[in-house]
Length: 381
Ligand code: SAM
Ligand code: SF4
Ligand code: SF4
Image 1 (tube, rainbow, N blue to C red):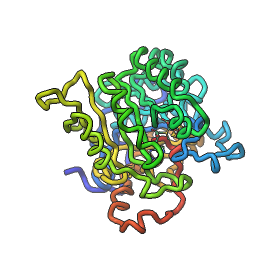
Image 2: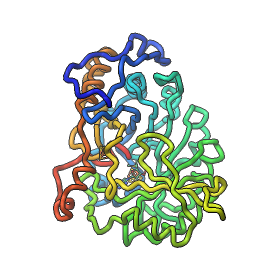
Image 3: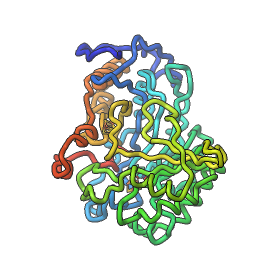
Image 4: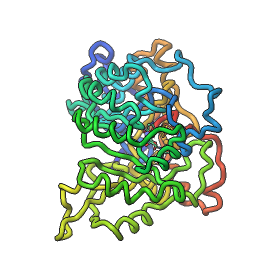
């Protein structure tokens, strides 16, 4: 059993070399766990709150119009600040770093940040699993440079294959062909296995589910279907627009030979299904698909993810209202030890499990507009 909550905050690691060298050697005295015994393994870093798409489930046009008050440049963490904070997280047990946004590829010279993060070492002495989630619109131009800088993999969000449906989903009339080129460019650059995330809204793009599955079958691309979530407070979420993964799976299994396979890593968000061969066993050449069922099957129990917002606040849950200000501490001259202690204390005090709590509510209350929550475009997926 993981250790119980402790209220004493103390530096867990020898962090004397952080900041001077980007190769951090750290030996955890004990594993950092939150109040529910969950370790800290995954840090998602939002590098911008801006986006060139207006997906209506994330940044609806009516709210994110041209007068929307995006963060001023001085509020953004610099690449050096991000790399320093990421180094401290990696030294505390984080193995996976994901760059996100807004649209991360809008941040100028993102390769320079990737290059800095690629120099970090986990507590096991490995390079962290360094990935990026993007809408794919700029990937054709950027894939090779990102790979050269040390990026390992990409996840591309794509909500349909039909051009008209896709243009409606991104709401800026962006053509699907350009995103498909971006995915090809990522594969060509060696940023595989590429994952494609599709948010499914009942009645809006659910007719794209089968075409998407057929299109990516056997290509090496892992397609994952995401239940439409009630993140933020601007997307007008309704339960009847959620297509539960169980229903989606039944639709797909009626047409395609799918067989369940186990999770690849602890805390993995997706339930995995492989295409089966004639004997019913997974056929590696045909690949797999995944389901991220954040609404109908909460997976808070092993949630090991922290999120760093563009302005340097640490959010402990996708549905959090507030974040913990690390930028203030950093810019006030906080030492690495002080920052590491703060991070450890914040994580040790974490008890968030929003999706599980919502799942326990009666349906009428699950849809009640809650207090303002952070927007997905602010902290990334
Ligand atoms: N702009 C990039 C992109 O779209 O990939 C990165 C940021 S975006 C906020 C990260 C992920 O969040 C995307 O895969 C997107 O589909 C997902 N997302 C945003 N709003 C969502 C919602 N309401 N429900 C489920 N997923 C959502
Ligand atoms: Fe932009 Fe990504 Fe949000 Fe779509 S999901 S609006 S691409 S940040
Ligand atoms: Fe993690 Fe919060 Fe999502 Fe639960 S609701 S899985 S705690 S991010």
